[in-house]
Length: 204
Image (cartoon, rainbow, N blue to C red; front, top):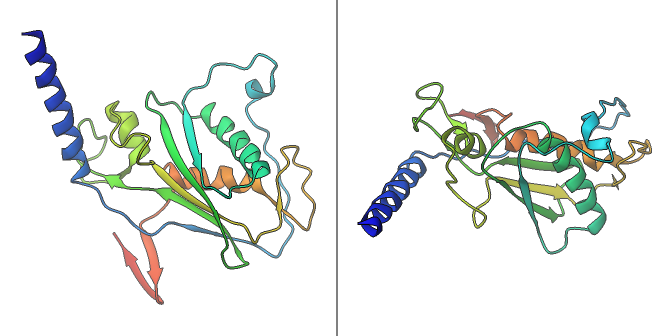
């Protein structure tokens, strides 16, 4: 009897995940462009992550790096991830795929949710789309798992980056931690559904 109960529960969970997946859409990622102006500002990270005995993280963000992702960039990336883990709360791990590749000289990077979903169980507002990490947080269900990231990101290897975490960025460099913090926000859903292809505007 226990076997049949567990099997039934497994079937129900699988069905629920497939039902959520069937409602997904995808839009082009937002792109972060480099500026030719030096504009400095600083907001300190949460004070508890700077303590010798930091408080418990509110979420778990797991990053998979592409083969040629520099070690210095990984350290800076994890620093940014650590800040987000102390800000957002989720019982479900958030998986990010981070790629390192050449791009146009004025593009810093891009990051976006790998999918959006609507009309799932306990949705706050009907007929509105939510990014995968938020859907998993609301439903308390891991829909994708480590083999399929919740967030996809790309960073431009042609940029003159500053990989330090001390905010002492030279005027001639771009602060990598700042850009990663910004891009993760896009991956978590701070983005829009309006985009342009070949000078034509589209909106989901």
